[in-house]
Image (cartoon, rainbow, N blue to C red; front, side, top):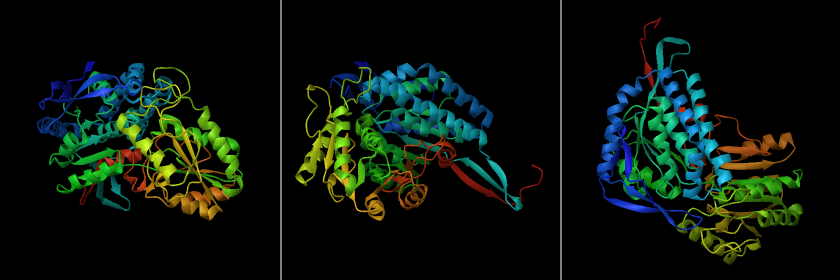
Length: 479
């Protein structure tokens, strides 16, 4: 087993002061592959102090220097891409080709999109129409960055790089379930020459290191991605110090298939639900289909599930890997069983491991029919390869069902009608609406409404989260 027994604090690798550790498992085999130290209060204090000591100088660094540093990070990240793919695949079960083709490139794309946003950012400018009033954007301060296990480098780079670009210093606490990629990222930051104390890494669990970070009076801003339960706990922990918080939480995306959409939209929608073993907050987990097309859509979605292979994460090819942990497997199995108990009809998959899999946290790609929107499988974020197919009567009914959820992260619309696209997309209560499978442009904001959180990540929108706005009157002209 590998021993990741050190943290990056103040520009050096240091041992944990807590003496506590947990094992890290390979989800494909359930074997222990690493021993991870858990930070205690003393470790958190030390990391925050290092970030605080580095803040004043880094906050006044030039945009040119920040851009040069981000360019070096991108260069080292690219050079370590295969190492990162292997770490991601092993820690959270992403198939190696998926890790190489999606997980790792997501981080590279965010690094470069943030650099572009920084190039275009105007940090000081007169208030329009008022030359004597200056508007200045300044770094928010010391940031606690808490990231999840399902898209490790996507979320690490969406937080760390904008914080750097804004002039902030930071303490990163990745998920203790899948920490290998973040540890490698700290090595990348070290090799790229990030100034001591600007970037700090600690490992730990949410109720220990995470809670201590969020309650720390030396932290000015918390950026968290994870569950709604943890988001509420973080908000409570931050309240005593009135610490600013940005939350990217869960989702229960509706994929509305209108009758003019091709059958390929149904197949693609099911596959996208199963991608990453369903462990994506923006997965289209509720497929909404008209009653006239319902039976045919079920056949297509069920076949897509049967065509979705499961295999060890190290195996090449198109397949899905295991769920990340035993706890996640238990949760998914429980919700599948609850769906059956509530009257939903299985047309593909179901409880248990796929045929031929007796080791590893593998789940069967599952499709439920006869789902009503009040069922648990239609309302709760399952975070597994489980698709609920729901019938609607007309366009207004489809929009009503899509919006009838506590979440509001991403919804999907499939139609060839431009007027319907405009009408429906405007009515959907979510931070993002994807139409006909078209990807969002680089730098588009990622984030949600309602219990999917608040705040945005990506491009100029993500950079703005790490900035305060200052107004200065009586500003001399010509400077």
